Amino acid sequence: MLSASVERVGNASVLHVAGQIVVGERLSALRDIVLCELEKHTIFLDLSRVDRIDAGGLGLLVFLHTSVNGLGTALKLLSPSAQVTEVFKLTKLDSVFTLYPAADTDSELLHSAGEPYEASA
Image (tube, rainbow, N blue to C red; front, side, top):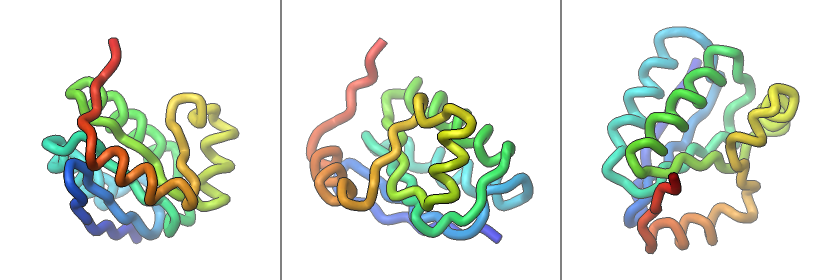
């Protein structure tokens, strides 16, 4: 089961995700939630309560990363659980995504909420 809630802070959105990011109907719902936040400069995915991610979930995150960055929005992953962090390391996706630990969350949020994100070419 996957659930998500949205918190808006200035020019940023924080999506608090809980459960499993795996192939299924709820994966489409997560995609839709993220894409509805494109007017924000930064979208944070709080992964602290995600206990499992599969290939479908990784594919969705890569799709979202590519899509939102192409439109000038940053997608940042916050506080990934140990299991999720391990999957990112094994798949080398930790070189594509920046994984922000819990300690960086507040300062990163305030910084991003105050300044617009500029996509680099």
